[in-house]
Length: 336
Image (cartoon, rainbow, N blue to C red; front, side, top):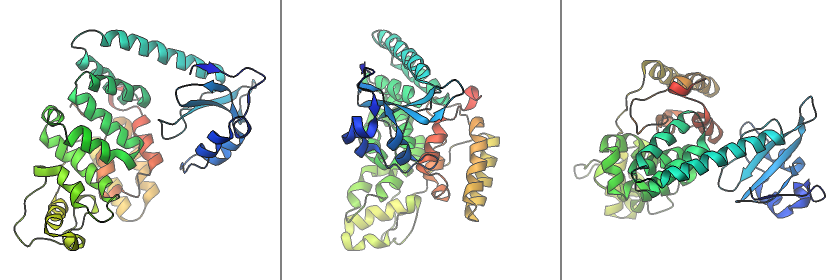
């Protein structure tokens, strides 16, 4: 944030900045009524990096402090709740100082690995925005791991655009594939790409699927009509031409390998799947949510249980709001 409003220019968002108010109201958050909040929010910021600082007159502490939030165009929801404006300022100052220190470290040769390690620690602490920035800085310095982990983390924040990032930053970069390893690409990035891209297919799915190349299995002639990872069906592609039908048939037959999970988290996944299969969606989520702090991986290239996004059994369980909850929950050694 570059400049705050003077006392005489502070005003309700709907009046002080009606254009922004019209754009950002009316979200579809599961646990938050964005429309009601935006209609009552007080705008205290004036100029910043596509972000707005807002106070909530409906959330007042015993000492009269209004809760404070940040809304930013580059973050797909309201930021974390702060008990007061002062608390928000203090946290943002800490973040600024941390960022300045990070930029100093980036000036040192060979610091990309340190950035990835720092970003992973931030991600596991649930500090999503910091982790995304750190992974991006590592990627700029040539880190394939930084590019991959930032892409995976971003999928939890906004899955609707994840396939573009996976295609360009993972599947289209041999260095990333070499660093991460084909087994993990097949287990995480490939099924995630298929799930996201399938929702964008409007008539020519072959163009999307072909980006996976040899990651997909080759099938005998005449094999089609299978439904596989991501809900991909080969039968519907025949009218698009033989090449498209062949690609979609390969995608439909693709079965991603399962990455190892801890015993505690695997048991939770099994129970959550069984509950979801019976239609007990909320109970399934409750099991997953309780197990999230216990998720961990010894791999330096894993930061979250991507299976929650790729397994069709959890498609109705993991809503956008719950996906964000997954990565904002401290996990593993950083659990509270």
